[in-house]
Image (cartoon, rainbow, N blue to C red; front, side, top):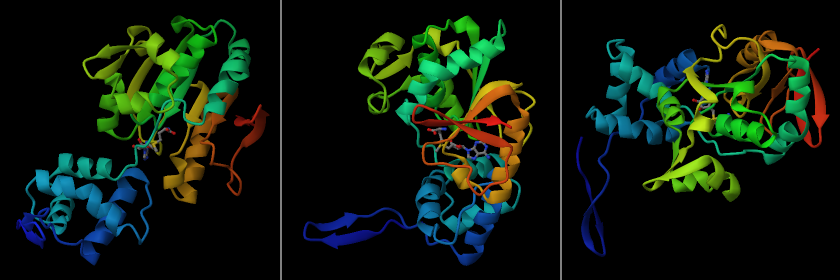
Length: 288
Ligand SMILES: C[S@@+](CC[C@H](N)C(=O)[O-])C[C@H]1O[C@@H](n2cnc3c(N)ncnc32)[C@H](O)[C@@H]1O
């Protein structure tokens, strides 16, 4: 790895170390590897994405080049590095109360309908692909705001990435994160200031558990659910994987249980067992 300099009107300035470009061979290795490990499809035009996301790993591990990183992963002798490569290629964008109307519908109608069907049983809600946890905690806050007690519900958040799960479990968010989507009244009610960060209060924290789960694998550890939020993740998969995941979710719902997708997502054109029902402006799906 070489430190380069760039000549500007201010003289010679150091530029970022060069890690070389991804060769065609490495590019195609990464596409196949990421698909096998996560189901995520990365098309031909993702050169920049690979380079920008993997660059910190190359530098941190002192590997010198992207190709050297790929060779190391391909050797099969660096499983933790291989996991970090997969994690780096996941997109973890999320925010509190993402697609606010969905949370409004849950609070005003959906939770009550599910609770009625559940009788004395606790409601089980699954935030599949929970990323850093904002979705699961938003569900927990909505339940409390709707009058439920922590003992009446069980929320599980799952993700493929250990790094995001660790953050979700910590329940700690920086100012920028709590200023995205979270009303100030709920911030004051359910979080405490912890240095520069905000910490989820124990009441909320105990309502949610986080586990590692690949959506393409078994859901045995989750148990039958009343509500599944599978939002902004199916977009990364091909049609076969999407269909396989939808079929698994359908099998994992109690009768009358519901699935909710991201606002911009739809099941149109897919082979599935769900029927669509509108609650206000929000779409929820139940098994036919
Ligand atoms: C864009 S985030 C969505 C977060 C949240 N559901 C939302 O809508 O704000 C997508 C998440 O899916 C996770 N993911 C990607 N592939 C996965 C897989 N095969 N199994 C489980 N989670 C996966 C990523 O790690 C990432 O955290």
